[in-house]
Image (cartoon, rainbow over all chains, first blue to last red; front, side):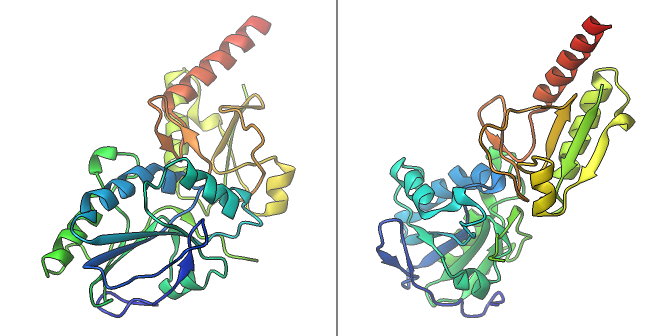
Length: 173
Length: 110
């Protein structure tokens, strides 16, 4: 389990088309554990994708990961993931499948969503929620944006660590 | 009128949803203390109760939002607010309307 200031776990996971993705030394990488069935993940989804688009020009890479047990939660199946990507909901952000749940465990991901910001050296710089209120789009993922602004400027994010809010990760029985 | 509030403690939405429900009951002239609150804590219990997610609110047995073909299980439930936003809790206006409709039906029967 990485702490703020420690190296984030490396991983390589397939997207909905089978292409492999990994953190690759971008100036900042956002790793977001998310899913299809959780209202918190869905409520925050557009805000997170907007951040991905807004910061792409600065080299920020965003990787969305679904770690949920799709047997118990069929709405998180690979087919359902692909349908959302095909519908354009991820707008170019790779939607990765963590079938073994090893990556979620390595990050100690707790909820969907649960966000991690990694700097160019692979060091974890922020972990938590996108902003303070899933129910208020005007929050505009302010914590995530502040973390990215800080990392891109070589500063320490404030806050660095917030409480992730959402549905629990659906671990295999 | 029978108002049931079913929740799973693994989903953090239930305190807000219960507060919204009690406020809607008060607005409708009902006793907020009359809501029957029950925790669902197992997949088996979810199946027996036809619980498709937390929270589930039923008024005289009718769900405040049709469940469609959602599978039962211990999870957070997806609601859609009147402005189109997705939310873990029902729109308070939907709760008030459901309570008023049930109240009108009950009055018509009496």
